[in-house]
Every structure is written in structure tokens, then in C-alpha cells.
Image (cartoon, rainbow, N blue to C red; front, side, top):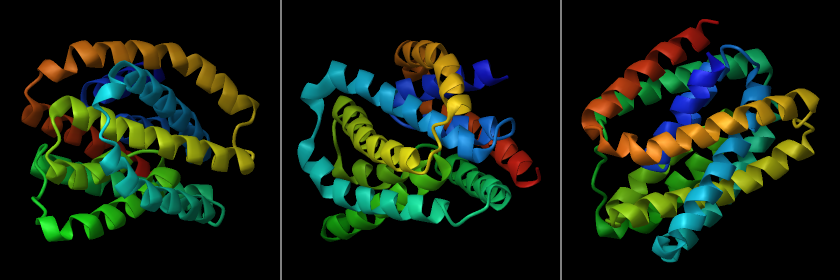
Length: 238
């Protein structure tokens, strides 16, 4: 089960530039505690981001990164602080509810996002990046689609969009890893799980870069939404 989850999750990320955590965390949290799943997936996401960034770094739009990075880092710090206050069981159920809501959003919009008027771009960049930092820190995933709300309106070229959002996730991931490490979450069990998951992450990223991009995106998004809806419901009722 876990082999399939990690492979599919990073195939999604390899093809779109985001979404790996949104798929992997709720499904793996059915097997492992959230406090184990989130640190593992965060490192895998970060390593995946490095791979994409190295290949396509010339397409990074640094102007957009500097707009959303400050809010992202503030959100990460606040999210990690909240993580110290919430017990594991309520956190798992909150993750389940969040994933259900996110699944509904994915199925309704199916890859489409609202168009933001130019005068609202900077405020939206600040709000969405802050929320993405909080969500990423607490739940280990689903931060990417929040960034998409802003970046889609920036009208970046396809390759620039994918590598720019990947670079933002890299910076966010490095900050989250430092925060999780300060909380002592990278214990022996987490490191063993991480070592076991690395080959699956590599295979999934390779498949995503070659296969997922060929799929009809609206159909793909709706199918992904169904999977997330089922996993989120199971996690909320666990």
C-alpha cells in the first residue's frame, strides 16, 4: 500500500510540480501517525524540488518567488508553533476534514482557478503564501494548490510555472525540515521510513515527468479529487 501511495504521489508531483504531499500525507496517515508522515513527506518533497530545480533552473521567475517567499516563511513558523499545541488524534481528524474540503475544490474547479484582478495581486500573494505556509507545516501537503491560486493569475509559461512553484516549495520545505528537527520529529523510525521511501519517490518522479503530463488534465484532476475524498473521509473517521 505505502509503495503504491508514494510512487503515485510523486508521479503527480513530477507531472504538475505540486500535489505530492496532498496525495501522500492523508493516505500514509491511515497507517502511520501524522507526526511521522508529515516529516517524511516533507523531506521527499524537498528532494523532489531539488531535482526539478536543477534541471529547469533557467525558467525560474525570481520576481514571483520574492513576492511570496516572506509570507510563506511566516506561515511556516506559525504552523510549526501550532503543531506543538495540537494532539495527534485531533490533528489527524483535522487533516481528514481539510483533505475532504480540498478534494471537493479539486473536483469542482478541475484545474481551473479564479482570475485575480491586477490591483489585488500583491495582497493575494501575501495571504495565499501565508496560508500555504501554515497548511504545509501542519498537514505536510496541499500547500502547492494554494500557491496556484496566485501563480495562475501571474500568467507564467508552463515550464516557468512548474519550476517556480517547485522552487517555492523547496524553500518552504527546508524551513519546515529545520522546524520539525527542532521539535525532535526526525527520530530513528522516521529516518528508516524516509530511507525506504526514497526509491519510490525517484520512480514516481520519473513516471510523472513522462506520463502524467500526457493525461487530460481535467479528467486527471477529478480522478485525483475522488481519491482524496475517500482518503480524507477515512482519516476523519479513523
